[in-house]
Image (cartoon, rainbow, N blue to C red; front, side):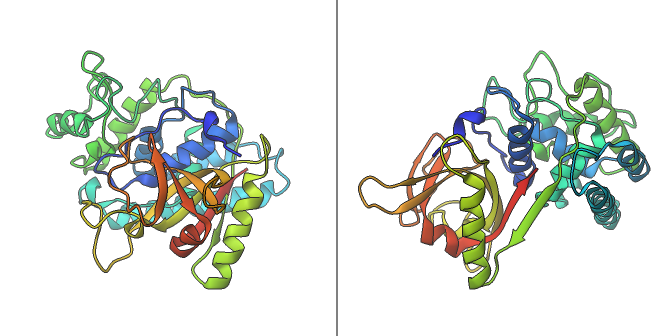
Length: 320
């Protein structure tokens, strides 16, 4: 069983710590039926996470129609709580670079999608330069050029003549509230029209204890389903355990929280082991993985055996 055909090309988060935006964009896109090669813009969700006004967010939540969800009232309450928490986090970072605001969870992109009034496509606001997928600092250079001005022009964020955003760390030097507003406004202009106003909600199952890890793997199998049925699922896991010692992402003696999307499951034809197919956000290069942990890798997707995935797992998440 393999759901990878539902997604566009594997993307590269570059030097940013915003893997949650890429994984969240993939899950939202699958849930809403976005057809590849297009995808939901991870750049838009990440920027919205850090540059959306709380007052506007609450107003947009109040206008959402949750009647199509069996637990719509609870979803509205939960969404309001999440965006308030996001705002509290942003207030705590006041006056500091957005580069310090790395990290997040699956609830952030879902909350951002809902309060922005729909999704922006990767073709409208790419998360990396489509003309040079190895470029990781294009947008960073664009925003750096603009950081000394109070207003960000609508065309400066995405220079049509030079490609498209390449690295979410691009927002690193935009630290004042007015600049946030202008960045958001520029992105919204590029994202017109936004697509689909159908609210989505997210759920997560923590898997820190051995018992919870077992329950998490069971839930993962339930979500994946069989054949064309089922859906992909997000996973939170210790990525330091799956990369080679020589890889720059390896931090000795520490847990490296990372999120990706599990899109498939198979029985290894050679070993008979149950393996899971993981869509990562590290581009298509497979050279950095620890071959003792990862069974195989191709084009940015890797296969990992059941017990090994279970050992590094700390969360299973999904959208509905």
